[in-house]
Image (tube, rainbow, N blue to C red; front, side, top):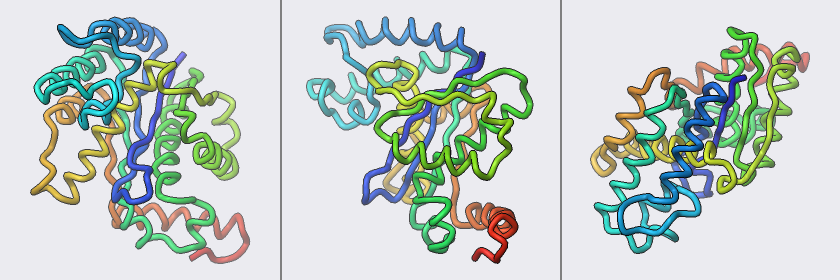
Length: 252
């Protein structure tokens, strides 16, 4: 059995980057990650109390459970949880969408079917799963952050309408809280690292590449897609052709 865990980052209104990202691997690897992750939550770094969950955004910004951490302590705990991901045979995956480019490339008709930028990023993760399904006879159990339940369901319904129904016979989907599933906390780590990288692409002078992100991108099987206007427009050409056939009229 294969499993996938996915979370979002940058889905607030004023973000210039939106990401859906996560991890794909075998169930036994996620069991190993879960054991190690829970042990790390109990002892994140010396002299600090157990964590309820690991949220990279909270860690980086010294929010909530990380309010008392020094910058050096926050970087250490960030590295500790990153290493747990690197130490298992699970592939990181993220689709990074430049928000302004998405709205410049798409028309209102496009967005009527594709949704907003975050839906487009979510669909990118699903498309990566489709490709994996087509090359494997195994079922895939996918878990998503329930905080994006509405957007996720919309993307899944759209995908079921325009992709082969056989794909969904091997794909099961559930939505859960990030606190409950350590796989979703690991997915949060991937999504936020990719989100920070997206801002590096926009403002490299003020947003250097994180060494933590660099280590994740060299992990076996890692797939990180940054979608600017050129990539989005390239996607729209065959998509509009398909939609024109389905709708019986030109889609622009």
